[in-house]
Structures are given as structure tokens and as C-alpha cells.
Amino acid sequence: MLLEGKTIIITGASSGIGASAAKLFAAEGARLVLGARRVDLLERTVNEISADGGEADFIAGDVEENGYAEALVKRAEERFGGLDGAFNNAGTTGDIGPIPCMEERNWHRVMSVNLNSGFYAAKHQIPAMRKRGGGSIVFTSSFVGHTIGLLGMGAYAAAKAGLIGMTQVLAAEHGPENIRVNALLPGGTMTPMAGEDAGYHEIVRGFHALKRMADPSEIARAALFLLSDHASFVTGTAMIADGGNSINKL
Image (cartoon, rainbow, N blue to C red):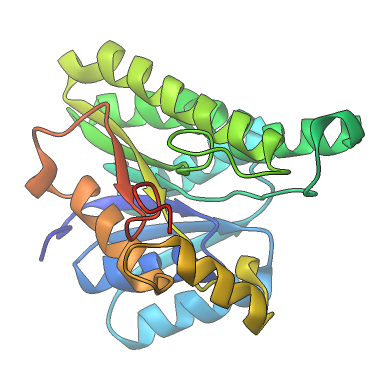
């Protein structure tokens, strides 16, 4: 099993990519601390993992808060003895629209959820991994703001591009401590964030070279690779798992 004996934090774990990753990582032997805002969904995921013989715990909270990032790390150390990896996956697109028309509160919230949360996560996760002699951190970024600019998504693009910049610096700073840091850039994925508009889904499918959207499990498997020892020489990357969105213009 690719994560056997490893303790992993997953944020945004109540649904979509995060929930799929939780079940996959548990099946691969990881002990998990799950984070999100919705207690009922976190409880359901933990119960499903436990029923399948896995080990998982959760703390509900807001990734915009420094104290929450600290609490997740403490739970990993107290419950499972340390921290080996983290999939910092929580995020939001915020309100869509051009920047001249954007409300200031939307800009700040998108930055807080997507980028500030990454700062808080790294601030507490890296010292914990240092105690273990190394570890792996994965941030969910986006092709938006990296390979393409989507109309109306200026705040989201800025925040997700910022994560890639932070990823590179963290990888350079902490590589000598055997701590790897990477960003994962998914394409359109069938999660609750994608909504239920079939017409919109059809448009999004057309953006991709594969002419479909990803299942959350496909993105979870990409994160699994980056967190596992199979990626032991991979750090500082912006790994694109976007079904060819970035290279497709038709």
C-alpha cells in the first residue's frame, strides 16, 4: 500500500476531491485527519473509512484560521504520533466577474480560503514533518492563472498562482530536510463546486482534449502519487492533471 504507516491531513475533505482522496488514501494504508466545515459529511466519511477497516479522525473548522491549521496538526500528533503528509485541498472560486466590478470582500475571501490557508498549513505542517525526518505536502492549485486566464476568475487565478509560487519556495527551503512540496492542478472535475447545470458541463467538457470532465477519484490518484514514495524525487512542481485543458483550444 502506497501510504502504509503514514499519517496524512486532508482539507476540503467533506465532499468532492477531498472526500474521494480520504477513501483512497485510507485504502492505501494512511491514517487520516480530515478537515472541512461540515461536521455531518466529515462524520459520514470517517464512518465509511472505519467500516472498511481504516483509521481516520476529523476536526471541523475554517481553513481561513491559523488556529485551525494548528489544531489539525496537533490532532495528527496526538492521535497518530506525528505527521507525514498533507493534501491541502480546500478552496473556493468565489463570485465570478471582472475585477473592476468585483467587491472587495470577494477578493479578500478568495485569497483567504485559497492562499492564506496554504500559508497557515505550511507554517504548522512543516515543523511537524521535520520531527519525522521528512514528509510531503500537496496544494491543490489550478491551471487557471497558470496556463490560461478564464474570464471573470481574476481573484481565483491570482490566489491559485500564488500557491504555485509558494510551493516552489517551500520546496527549495525544505528540500534539505527531506520535505517535498508540490502543487496539483486539476482540470474540470465533477464535484459539487461544478454545480448541476448539464449545459455548463457540456461546455466544460469541450475545453478538455479528452472531451470529458474528471471524476474526483482521478484527481485523488494524482495526489496519491505526489504524497507517496513513488514521487520521492518530485518536488517544487506544478503537476497538471487537467485532461488536456491547457493544450486544447478547440
